[in-house]
Image (cartoon, rainbow, N blue to C red; front, side):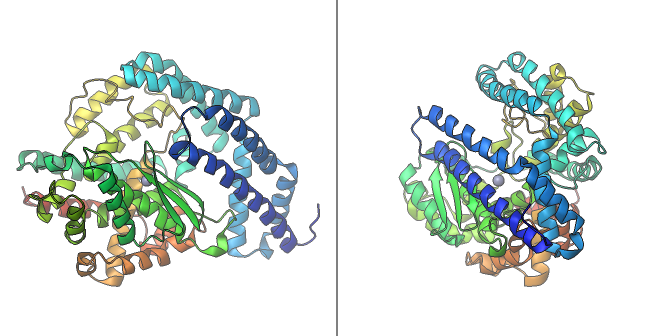
Length: 506
Ligand code: ZN
C-alpha cells in the first residue's frame, strides 16, 4: 500500500476510478459502434476485444488492493467529506457487485443469458413460448439466488428492485401501483366510450431524410449542444454516455410513423440533457453520471411527455415540423397533431403505448415478476396470467405470446426488477413539474415559445448537477419533497380529462 493518509488513499481511489472510466469508455464505444455503424458481420472480432477488456475491468475492480483501500477509507470515514463518503460507498458497491456472485455461477449465468437471447428472439418470432420456457425457468432461479447474494436481509424481489432503484421496495410499489390503477383504469374506460381521436395521418409516408432534418430541429429546440452530443441511427433508440462532455443518442426513422422518431429524439434527448449537466467536479469518479434508472427515466419522460406532448409546446413546434412535410401535413392543424400524439388507447405492445396506458403495461410485468421471484407463479403459468392481467388492466385480448409475454427483451436478458423504474420515472417527473411550477410559476407562455431555458435550468439546479451524489429518494425529496404519486395521478387525470372532453364527475 502506498498511502498513509485518507487524502492519499482518496487519490489512489481516484486513480482506480479514472481507469475504470477509461475502460468502460472503450467498451461502450465498441458496443455503440456495433449498434450504429459497424457492418453486420463484424461481431467476432468485437466479441474478442470486449472479452479481453472485461477481463481488464474485472482485474482492476476485483484487485484485493482495492478492498484494502476501501476498508482503510471506511475506517477513516470521519476524515472524509460528505461527497467522498458517498464516492467510497458507491465504489464499494461496485467492487462487492463483482465479488458477491461466485465466479463459476456468474460464468454459467452469462452463458445462459447468451443462449437465452437467441432462443428468445426465435421464440418471439415463431410464437413459441414453450421453447423459451426452460431458459426463463433457469433465469428466474438464478435471480432468486442472486437476490440472496445482493442482500440477504431483503425479500428476494426487494433485493432485485434495489439493484435498479436504490431504496425502492414492494411495499412502496404496491401502494404506488394501487393508487395508479384505481385512477387510470376507470379513466381508460371513460376514454373508450368517448369520441375517438384520429391519428391516421401520423402513418402517412414521411421520408427518412426529411425526418432527419426534423430531428435536428428538435435537438436545437432542446438546446442540446451538438459539440457534445451525437445523434445516430440504430434499430432501437438508446443513450450512451461516455462522460458529461460526450453523450450519444440514437433514433430509428420509420417512414410510416412520424411520431416514433420525433418523440424518441426528445426522450433520448432528455437522457442526454441530464448527463451533460452533471457537475464537472464528479467527472471520472463513481459520482459521475445519472444516479438511477428511475431518475433517468424521469428526465427522458419529462421532456418526451410532460413537455413534448403538452399543448403549448406542440403548438409552438408544429409549424416547423409541418414545414418539413408541407404536402403530407397540409390538411393537419396543430390541434389535430396535438390530439393525435396524445391519443390514449389500450394496446398490446408496451413500447408503443401512449402516456396514459403505459403504466398499466408496467403493472402487469410488476405483478408477474413479483410472483415469479416469490415462487408463487410458475413459468408455465406465465402466458395465461399475462393474458388475464392484460384483459383485467387494459381490457384487451392477447392474440399470441409474440404480442404477449414474449414481447420484451428484459427477462431473456436477466433483468428482473427493472420495469418498475419506468413507471416511477413518470411519476417523479410529474412531481418535479409541480415543484417547478411553484418556483417558476405557470409555464404555458414559455412553452408556447418553445423556450426551455428556465425548465432546463431548474432541472440542472435541482437534479442534474448532483449526478450520483444522493440516493434517488433523497435527490427527489431535496428537489420536490418525499415521493408522492398523487402528483402523477392528478397530472394524468387533468390532462386526459381535458383532451377527451370528459367530465371529472362521471
Ligand atoms: Zn429512456
